[in-house]
Amino acid sequence: MTAATTFSVHQLGKFPATRSLGREGRDRLEDLLANNNGIDLTVDFSGVHGMTPSFLDEFLGKFLTSGDITKSDATVKVIGLSEDNAYAVLVCVERRETQVVVLDETSVHLVGDRMLAETFDQAVQLGTFKASDLGDALGLSAQNANNRLKRLSAIGAVRKTQVTGSSRGGKEFSYRTVPPFVVDKQPLAPA
Image (cartoon, rainbow, N blue to C red; front, side):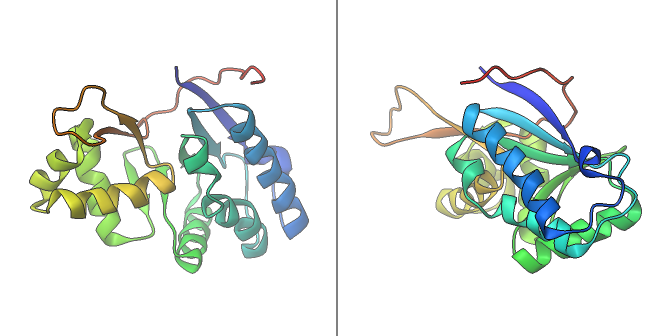
Protein backbone atom coordinates (compact mmCIF):
# COMPACT_ATOMS: atom_id res chain seq x y z
CA MET A 1 0.00 0.00 0.00
CA THR A 2 1.27 3.44 -0.92
CA ALA A 3 0.87 6.35 1.48
CA ALA A 4 1.26 9.99 0.58
CA THR A 5 2.58 12.85 2.63
CA THR A 6 3.66 16.45 2.13
CA PHE A 7 6.68 18.07 3.78
CA SER A 8 6.28 21.85 4.05
CA VAL A 9 9.61 23.63 3.71
CA HIS A 10 7.91 26.77 5.08
CA GLN A 11 8.16 25.20 8.56
CA LEU A 12 11.90 25.92 8.26
CA GLY A 13 11.21 29.62 7.62
CA LYS A 14 10.25 32.07 4.89
CA PHE A 15 13.91 32.64 4.01
CA PRO A 16 15.88 29.51 4.98
CA ALA A 17 19.52 30.40 4.69
CA THR A 18 21.94 28.10 6.49
CA ARG A 19 23.42 24.67 5.93
CA SER A 20 22.50 23.68 9.49
CA LEU A 21 18.84 24.49 8.76
CA GLY A 22 19.12 22.54 5.50
CA ARG A 23 20.53 19.57 7.42
CA GLU A 24 17.66 19.78 9.93
CA GLY A 25 15.10 19.69 7.10
CA ARG A 26 16.91 16.84 5.34
CA ASP A 27 17.02 14.86 8.58
CA ARG A 28 13.24 15.19 8.82
CA LEU A 29 12.81 13.97 5.24
CA GLU A 30 15.13 11.03 5.87
CA ASP A 31 13.16 10.16 9.03
CA LEU A 32 9.97 10.06 6.95
CA LEU A 33 11.58 7.64 4.53
CA ALA A 34 13.20 5.53 7.25
CA ASN A 35 9.88 4.94 9.02
CA ASN A 36 7.67 4.46 5.96
CA ASN A 37 8.31 2.34 2.90
CA GLY A 38 6.77 3.16 -0.47
CA ILE A 39 5.49 6.68 0.20
CA ASP A 40 4.69 9.36 -2.37
CA LEU A 41 6.52 12.36 -0.89
CA THR A 42 5.69 15.92 -1.92
CA VAL A 43 8.17 18.61 -0.88
CA ASP A 44 6.18 21.87 -0.77
CA PHE A 45 8.02 25.19 -1.10
CA SER A 46 4.82 27.29 -0.87
CA GLY A 47 5.38 30.29 1.39
CA VAL A 48 9.16 30.16 1.01
CA HIS A 49 10.04 33.61 -0.35
CA GLY A 50 13.68 32.87 -0.99
CA MET A 51 16.51 30.57 0.07
CA THR A 52 20.24 30.46 -0.18
CA PRO A 53 22.08 28.03 -2.45
CA SER A 54 23.82 26.55 0.60
CA PHE A 55 20.50 25.79 2.33
CA LEU A 56 19.03 24.26 -0.82
CA ASP A 57 22.10 22.14 -1.51
CA GLU A 58 22.20 20.82 2.05
CA PHE A 59 18.44 20.20 2.12
CA LEU A 60 17.37 19.07 -1.35
CA GLY A 61 20.63 18.43 -3.20
CA LYS A 62 22.03 16.01 -0.64
CA PHE A 63 18.62 14.41 -0.10
CA LEU A 64 18.25 13.60 -3.80
CA THR A 65 21.72 12.07 -3.98
CA SER A 66 21.69 10.17 -0.66
CA GLY A 67 20.28 6.90 -1.98
CA ASP A 68 17.56 6.86 0.68
CA ILE A 69 14.88 7.33 -1.97
CA THR A 70 15.75 4.06 -3.70
CA LYS A 71 16.08 2.12 -0.43
CA SER A 72 12.64 3.20 0.75
CA ASP A 73 10.83 2.80 -2.60
CA ALA A 74 9.64 6.40 -2.43
CA THR A 75 8.59 8.81 -5.11
CA VAL A 76 9.47 12.49 -4.70
CA LYS A 77 8.12 15.62 -6.29
CA VAL A 78 8.54 19.32 -5.58
CA ILE A 79 5.69 21.85 -5.64
CA GLY A 80 5.06 25.49 -4.76
CA LEU A 81 8.13 26.98 -6.42
CA SER A 82 8.22 30.69 -7.17
CA GLU A 83 10.12 31.70 -10.30
CA ASP A 84 13.25 32.52 -8.27
CA ASN A 85 13.03 29.32 -6.23
CA ALA A 86 12.48 27.26 -9.39
CA TYR A 87 15.72 28.68 -10.78
CA ALA A 88 17.52 27.91 -7.50
CA VAL A 89 16.31 24.29 -7.68
CA LEU A 90 17.50 24.03 -11.29
CA VAL A 91 20.98 25.30 -10.33
CA CYS A 92 21.07 22.94 -7.32
CA VAL A 93 20.25 19.81 -9.30
CA GLU A 94 22.63 20.76 -12.11
CA ARG A 95 25.49 21.23 -9.64
CA ARG A 96 24.69 17.91 -7.98
CA GLU A 97 24.24 16.25 -11.39
CA THR A 98 20.86 14.92 -10.35
CA GLN A 99 17.23 15.56 -11.25
CA VAL A 100 13.92 16.23 -9.53
CA VAL A 101 10.27 16.07 -10.56
CA VAL A 102 8.52 19.45 -10.37
CA LEU A 103 4.75 19.84 -10.35
CA ASP A 104 3.48 23.30 -11.21
CA GLU A 105 0.06 24.69 -12.13
CA THR A 106 0.17 23.31 -15.66
CA SER A 107 2.40 20.24 -15.78
CA VAL A 108 4.62 17.68 -14.15
CA HIS A 109 8.15 17.61 -15.54
CA LEU A 110 11.67 16.57 -14.70
CA VAL A 111 14.30 19.23 -14.06
CA GLY A 112 18.00 18.62 -14.49
CA ASP A 113 18.81 16.46 -17.52
CA ARG A 114 17.24 16.90 -20.95
CA MET A 115 17.49 13.24 -22.03
CA LEU A 116 15.96 12.01 -18.78
CA ALA A 117 13.32 14.75 -18.96
CA GLU A 118 12.22 13.44 -22.37
CA THR A 119 12.22 9.90 -20.99
CA PHE A 120 10.15 11.03 -18.00
CA ASP A 121 7.66 12.84 -20.27
CA GLN A 122 7.13 9.63 -22.24
CA ALA A 123 6.80 7.62 -19.03
CA VAL A 124 4.07 10.01 -17.81
CA GLN A 125 2.18 9.42 -21.07
CA LEU A 126 2.47 5.65 -20.66
CA GLY A 127 1.32 5.58 -17.03
CA THR A 128 2.18 2.03 -15.97
CA PHE A 129 4.63 0.26 -18.27
CA LYS A 130 7.60 -2.06 -18.66
CA ALA A 131 11.07 -1.10 -19.87
CA SER A 132 10.34 -2.63 -23.27
CA ASP A 133 7.20 -0.44 -23.61
CA LEU A 134 9.22 2.66 -22.88
CA GLY A 135 11.95 1.50 -25.25
CA ASP A 136 9.42 0.99 -28.05
CA ALA A 137 7.91 4.44 -27.46
CA LEU A 138 11.33 6.13 -27.55
CA GLY A 139 12.98 3.93 -30.18
CA LEU A 140 15.46 2.49 -27.64
CA SER A 141 16.55 -0.99 -26.74
CA ALA A 142 14.94 -2.42 -23.62
CA GLN A 143 18.38 -2.33 -21.95
CA ASN A 144 18.86 1.37 -22.74
CA ALA A 145 15.34 2.12 -21.48
CA ASN A 146 16.09 0.07 -18.35
CA ASN A 147 19.26 2.10 -17.72
CA ARG A 148 17.27 5.33 -17.91
CA LEU A 149 14.57 3.89 -15.65
CA LYS A 150 17.22 2.96 -13.09
CA ARG A 151 18.29 6.61 -12.93
CA LEU A 152 14.68 7.83 -12.73
CA SER A 153 13.96 5.34 -9.94
CA ALA A 154 17.01 6.54 -7.97
CA ILE A 155 15.57 10.07 -7.71
CA GLY A 156 12.01 8.96 -7.02
CA ALA A 157 10.56 9.91 -10.42
CA VAL A 158 9.28 6.36 -11.03
CA ARG A 159 8.44 3.41 -8.80
CA LYS A 160 9.24 -0.09 -9.93
CA THR A 161 7.39 -3.23 -8.95
CA GLN A 162 8.51 -6.76 -9.67
CA VAL A 163 6.12 -8.62 -11.95
CA THR A 164 5.26 -12.05 -10.59
CA GLY A 165 5.13 -15.02 -12.89
CA SER A 166 7.41 -13.59 -15.56
CA SER A 167 7.41 -15.79 -18.64
CA ARG A 168 10.90 -14.66 -19.62
CA GLY A 169 12.71 -16.50 -16.82
CA GLY A 170 14.35 -13.49 -15.15
CA LYS A 171 13.23 -10.64 -13.00
CA GLU A 172 10.75 -8.40 -14.76
CA PHE A 173 9.53 -5.05 -13.49
CA SER A 174 6.69 -2.70 -14.21
CA TYR A 175 7.02 1.03 -13.59
CA ARG A 176 4.75 3.94 -12.84
CA THR A 177 5.60 7.60 -12.56
CA VAL A 178 5.32 9.85 -9.56
CA PRO A 179 1.64 10.87 -9.25
CA PRO A 180 1.16 14.01 -11.39
CA PHE A 181 -1.01 15.58 -8.67
CA VAL A 182 -0.82 16.24 -4.95
CA VAL A 183 -2.58 13.71 -2.79
CA ASP A 184 -4.16 15.10 0.36
CA LYS A 185 -1.78 14.87 3.26
CA GLN A 186 -2.18 11.70 5.21
CA PRO A 187 -0.52 11.22 8.57
CA LEU A 188 1.99 8.42 8.43
CA ALA A 189 1.97 5.81 11.15
CA PRO A 190 5.33 4.84 12.60
CA ALA A 191 6.70 1.68 11.02
